[in-house]
Image 1 (cartoon, rainbow, N blue to C red):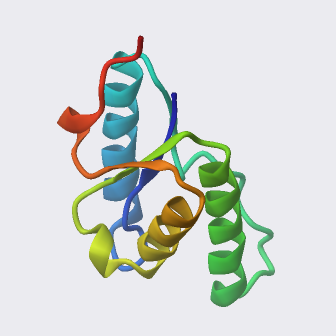
Image 2: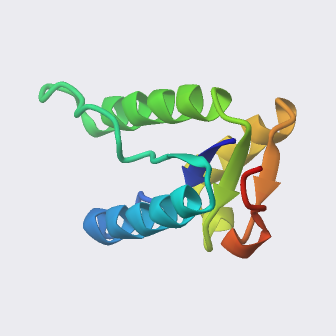
Length: 108
């Protein structure tokens, strides 16, 4: 199963969140699933303003999420606009939703 990792980024230390996402990805991989990490996207063009950069990243995030079977929402997702958008997309498209890593079943 392909599992997208939804983690709050805006307003947090990006490197700490990147490290957390990498740990989540390792855990998901160890369960036999394919993790999709939101940090694994190319950098936006240098001339983009902050609003354009945000839209650029969210575009990649939503397109990556829609290619998945499930989404893992890390702690604090409810306070993140981006995570809430990802949650709405996951619900609309009927993806499996997990709020805890220990609720993700081992791959068959």
